[in-house]
Length: 630
Image (tube, rainbow, N blue to C red):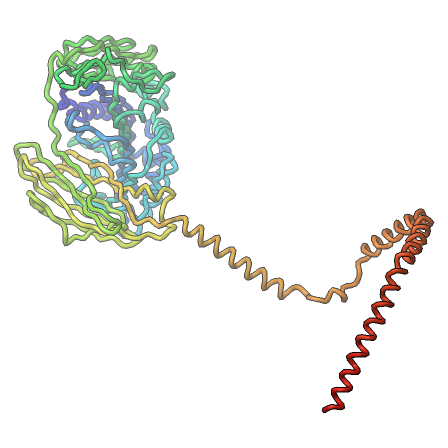
């Protein structure tokens, strides 16, 4: 597939937008660009552009421009805004260059940068920036309020204003923040659609379904607000907002039945096996690479067809959908009229306001007119190396695939708990032109590292440095502390060959940093043990101080105990009257039997007594004789 024409899409959209702007200051246009990609993927780019005169904006008069966003920009004195919601990864090795030169995409998660009127102060921009992120957080149902001073940097060479600010440009200050851990989902898409004039009820915005969008391999939602002024004719300046959604969909995955979304393996007889492999057999298959383009329809890929057109001040030559396929590939379009332009690979369609629009493309065994992929301007990868919980190293690889050297701006925004050692910064096979560095302050400010580099032609440059991991307080760890901490991706801007700004952007993937994590069960054990000791000690001491100890004899009898005792005695008395006569007879019989039994024993005792007396008498006599002899 040819992606070079995709890069010229902003120019065509700009011409279409400018033609509408000068016809009417209040304007609205929308456009969908479809491009099949290798590996059975489809790239879809939705663009919605609305403008309003600056005079109407300052007087709070809006027609197509969203009022909710305009009020936030007016309150925070924001002159230019760029907001990104991105998930997934663009496979530049297989799909070629990034759409729109990477100008309408951001890093993983949420990325925001804006030019704020500083008013000649250093603290006022930070206060307005804080109000801006908090307001946008509520508007888009995102965690933008977590972009505080520790996640905010001030880039020097990475970004340039896209709008025409005139004499106000000198007083504007750029602030940039990223949230790599933010999960983009449907609750962010709904406020995005509410900013559109048709609210996602008509036009190409009806194709934006959350189930399909967030199931894509890669997707990015962008909002760009900038002032645009006329050329030399002195036309009126307008405030332009561009809302865009760009995604790379897997066609087989998107066309899966919604009622049975579980992926199931294909049957062995439906898989094309590579029979040249030695392990190929009747039960073993090594699949061939899929080179055929599958059949697909717009309604099955996005869940339903486009419902009519959002017909707001369109001119006769405006088109809503562009399909980029070879001219000899059959295409069946319903609910739209095809416009003819001098192009061999693009087909333009104008939607009908009263019928649904759908596209149908049959399977293509192999590209009829194969075209080479457009080579990306730069390949960039970034990894964390090292072992242990104390130190590590950062490795960034930049590869220039072109036959001429590249000049680029490389920026990293590091959290404060990742402390780089700048004396270990090493650049191999490249030249460092300039360095902008702002050190971090614990819990107050992150690290800002920005370099201007030159990479030789068809070579690879490696940027490395060592860093130290900080130890956090136990209250600063998130609930999933053992997962790690997200590090924002690096942003690379490739400058034009003449050294000026206006090149393409490349962003690396976000990283996962493992910090020293304490055993969070120990605080629980300490709390339980401490509470037990305190309870025992305090309880004993409290008893000694508040209780009075007396003898049991000193305790007065309880009235209830006296009542119980009297009741018991009364019951015994009643029982004693009934059994009194029987007890007397039994006592007399026992006494008579006792006297009879005692007679022999008394006689025996008398006999034993006499014997003992005689024995005692003889003993006394012997004792007296012994005394006389002595």
